[in-house]
Amino acid sequence: PRVERFLDALAGHWSLDIAALRCPGRPDVATTGGAAFARRARTATPVRLEVAMGLETAHPEALERLHKRMSVDTFRVAARWLEARELALRVFLLIAPPFIPPDEQDAWLLHSIEEALACGATAVSLIATRPGNGALEALATEGLFDRPRLPAIERSFDAALAHAAGRARIFLDLWDLDRTATCSECRADRRARLHAMNLAQQILPVVECARCAVSMATA
Image (tube, rainbow, N blue to C red; front, top):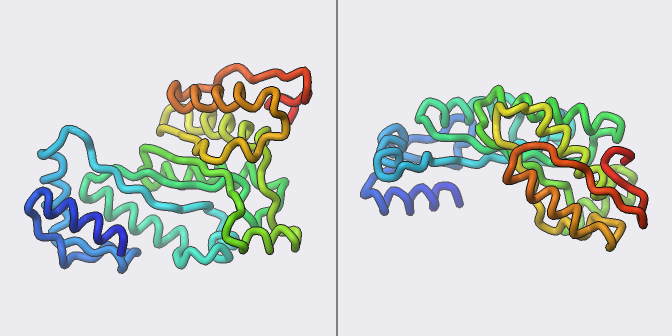
């Protein structure tokens, strides 16, 4: 419904009627004449309209247990719908989601990035899984979730940039990042490094800290 309201607002701005055509794989998203809407969006502004969708992870069991009410296959259908209308796709992925064994997290993150790229994503936003609604806290008590710490987040971002190798823009969500740091001495420098990597789209030298003796190279 929120996506529908957003498209309705854009349609009103461009005097379009977008009330009838439903997006395959996402029946809650409706647009009439989606192709016409996309064409008008492209001519009205030099900026290509980008739609963001949360895949979270391509791990089938974890995706099901996250109650996303979709599968990788339905995500692909929705991505093809966007591609047919020449709309850009941004994909949200989680760093260290629950229900994936710790020793498989890195591999599944890269697999999820590859799935996003195969769906035509031009940008991938990484979000470190964080508690806050009570559900993850409950999972943590059962040993099914462990909030990623800053070194693990840094390692994941490094690996993601290297894996994408310029095929898409890779971004790390820095919101609430300070809560994942264990050392106040190097926290600001580490955040600054990640922010610079978001802008430069390349891996930058690691931050060394004599106080915590932790760096991405040893995390």
